[in-house]
Image (cartoon, rainbow, N blue to C red; front, side, top):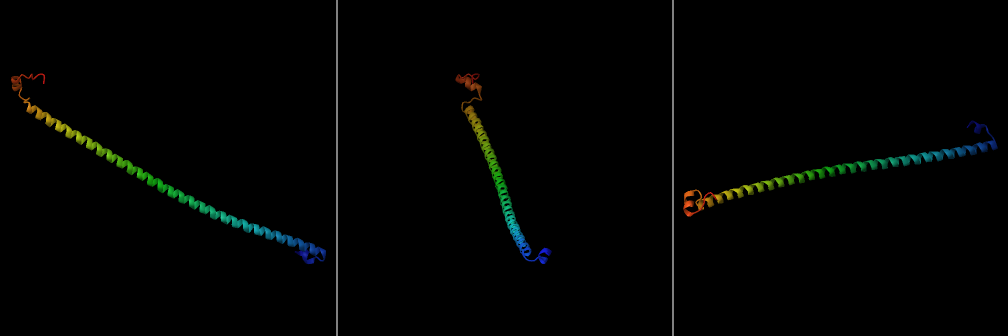
Length: 130
């Protein structure tokens, strides 16, 4: 600045042109800085959006996994309950069948008078074979 203040003529014009170029360079650099700051802000916003989306995705994924696990546990519990019920039914049928068999055997025993060996001997039935 001091050189321009004391310069005259062509020196003044040369220095003035240099100052103009410097000013243009400063403006260009300033514009570049502003553009870079805007891009950086945009990238920051995009990164924040990406992080938010990723966090939302992970949250939803965790909820779905928890729900799937809960449903699997309920299905396994229901299967165990049905299996238990089926075993109880089979055992109940087996007990009923055995009782009926014993009852029918007793009726057969009584119908053929198997509790009295002398009566069977009179009819010619060998008790030892029975």
